[in-house]
Length: 412
Picture 1 (tube, rainbow, N blue to C red):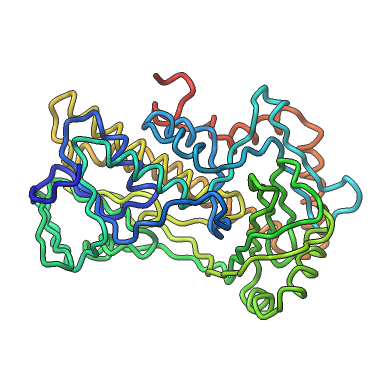
Picture 2 (cartoon, rainbow, N blue to C red):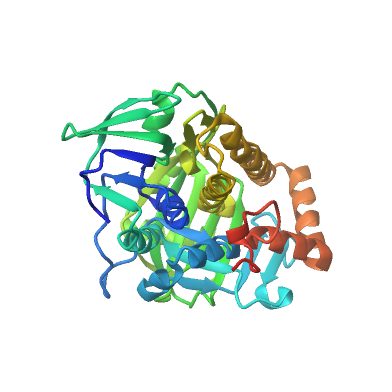
């Protein structure tokens, strides 16, 4: 549905990325009128296109959400890569000490998750939105003005179109204009690290395994892609990251292979590289009357466990569930009472993951000999203790925690 003649909506979602579009799709059966505003619509994936630099590790719970809203097939029809194992080890370890291997077969599942390009996810979601009668996608327009009011907010587009709504949702990323317009403060902790991303071609096949090595300067992840290449996320202290970015391709591949312990042999080639600062952000509140924040607009975390987008998708599914329940019970879906249910539900889950990632970063991101011994002992204990390993696997796959219904395997 793309009729922009309607200028008032029940729900207006600013940001049609992965999280905002998931929220719109999850509200398809509510009967509410919804608009999604997205300035940048990606080009469709072509068969021989190079792989994008930005990918996400999609958990089972997120996959369930995508299946429920009718986009998982669209993702698979484009391209994604299942990973069946995850191997994690510490650069200070020797032999098998300080190494843990997670195997999907140990938990009776086919895979631990999927590596998917962010563009693929967004394209599949936008394709789905275009099929929904109650959702308008407003393409190629920036929001130039946001006037929030508890009962009825209004935004102005760059072509001077004015649109009002009962519930305004900020799904517009870490630098959210919606969040800034309503003066919601951020708790910010800078890691003094940057994440370097690239697509590389290793000598050996990735074995459908997600690999992660903890270095003193930050974690290095090799993530499998469907053509045998790997997407890398190399988190390093800012000065070190700047140095790495200045290397030519040959030097970069050589240093990357060494940092990765040559697990897949030499790194034969690399794509262009990009680097971005790593910052933990958490909004002081997620909601006001007639307003909600989801995804990176509400929180960002260290990428070492690849959970950022999964947290955002759980935000979207949870908010959709709260809104749908309010509609069924004939309650105001945009009231502060209703929206605070969403905030209470998600804030604790997100905060737990944020602090866990900060703790991992502090524990592994140094070369203190005592901490090195503790790390190696801990990883070895996990490897040898099935109960601990199974619990960690379930958490990583999204089987643990207070999940929205559509993220559960049993939900129909």
